[in-house]
Length: 213
Image (cartoon, rainbow, N blue to C red):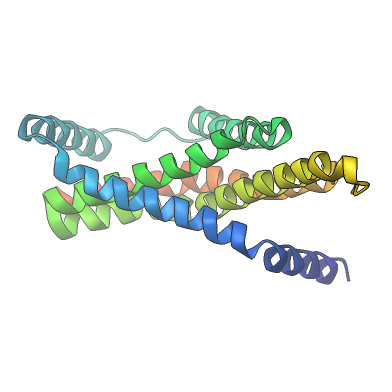
């Protein structure tokens, strides 16, 4: 019964805010496209330097022991939780809302740039390396980031509607606790992404790097 209630709430939320979801997803995809196009603007010496770093990175991964456990989990977990907190605060302060949108665009840009650069330089091997290094945890972190940003945008619009229509007698309760719970649910997915990035992604990257070499 509880799961059905949550499912109905999520379905209603998505339908009611479909335009906001479309905008946030479009912003992320725009970042991906700009990141991919940015690879074409790199100068030859910049590409050479990045390729050198990539070769060193792959060699180190293939030859050294991987960090596991809390040594790797805590920094990744803190980075993801910090992102969720920043987006939550951005929605609360209203003025900080652009920060959420910038984070979405930046995430898309970095993902698009990384994949495009690897594919451009090492072709199908680069695609495989990008898939193993980015896809596993991004399968959870990107949807969570999108949900976090949508939650912040929806809450901000609710606050603005209250302030704008207050003098006209239109006043609706600001769903602070609903917004906070929404952020918490999305943050749990970020925690899951952190676990995948800690215990699964390094193993896949190390295996792929050894095979590519």
